[in-house]
Length: 88
Image 1 (tube, helix red, strand yellow):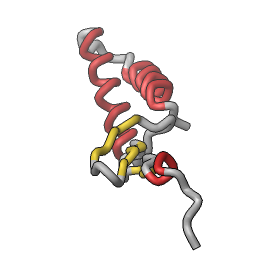
Image 2 (cartoon, rainbow, N blue to C red):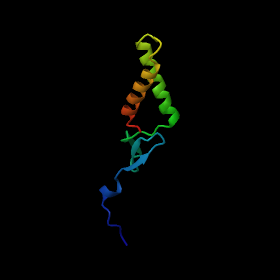
Image 3 (cartoon, helix red, strand yellow):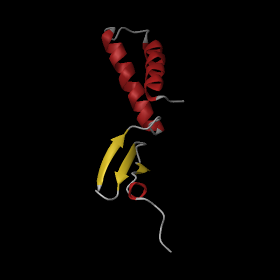
Image 4 (cartoon, rainbow, N blue to C red):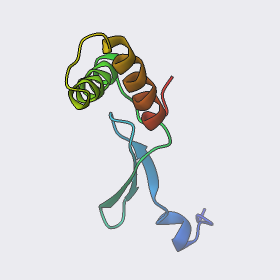
């Protein structure tokens, strides 16, 4: 029995998800891949914590590391990172 698929159906790109959450369309006929960021990148808790810590550090640096603003730096950095990565 012959397959009723057309040539365009056979060459359709297949989406694959990488371990970092990026969607990669792989065209099996040509072997090329096109990376597209997914709607929500997958970050582990440690990676997310590191991004927040860095953002908080830069906030503290901008205010001259004056004591007493550490919690505010952290809270604002956390909100910023979660907004940017579309996180929890």
